[in-house]
Length: 339
Image (tube, rainbow, N blue to C red; front, side, top):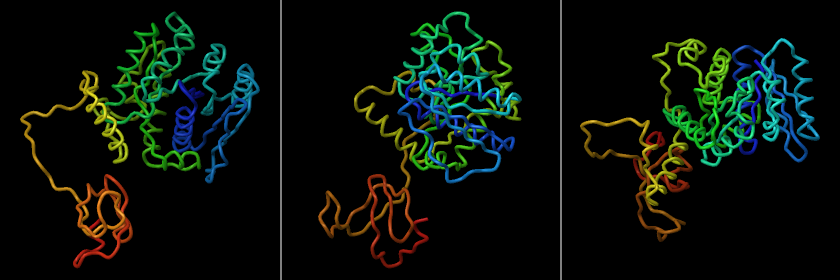
């Protein structure tokens, strides 16, 4: 299965998608081949710290967008048995329909911002995909999108820009989650995390299922379940956001609520419902003690911090608002109390 990733805006999301899929193929079949093509001035991938057996990484610099087609053709000819080559290509080459026709599965990676979606719709419109060009219609892949209903929300987003731009997008039934800085560093280093591998295996299954979709605009739940080796009833997405994802999303939403921009009908369309609800309280972990060097509190004053999220129990702690260095503990306080 030859797959090529293009970024709707910039290259970072597409490169991460290519690295995630390459790693999933390596785990699934024991071999994978990644071909990255850059234009003058674009960065090549750094030398990875880890080089697993079975992984081949090839990098080319093309002088022009037109030269990319020759590179893709040569690399495809070098592996005629469709061994699972993943291409990471410049976004500008996406607008060359003859290039897309040489790739079994072209994928346009769409970031989480409204402008990312607008740019994707514009790219499809330029390609003329409001007509009958099914043979080169690319798939849309949402990126940087978290939550249990992220794939459904992205499908709704593609429907909106399809209407506004007069295009007919094809949407994959999975999305890539927001990646932390550490996860991005692991990918570039040739390593993986449990979350990136899980996302990659779902993406690999969705792409395999897409090959039997013909000219359809989506992948059926039955096809995805078969590719995953699961039952249709077990396809419900899980919420794989970590604490950092949740806090970043919460910060964005609180600003929008403050500015009276949220919640919108779209925000509430695919969220859970609570019946027989009532307000309550619960305890959260905090630190108490005398503080020194705080920007808002005089030295020596006793404080109660905001929610405590992480600590090594001896030298540092991270609360909602900031890091703290831990000095002498109070009588009776033990390291285990912070874990």
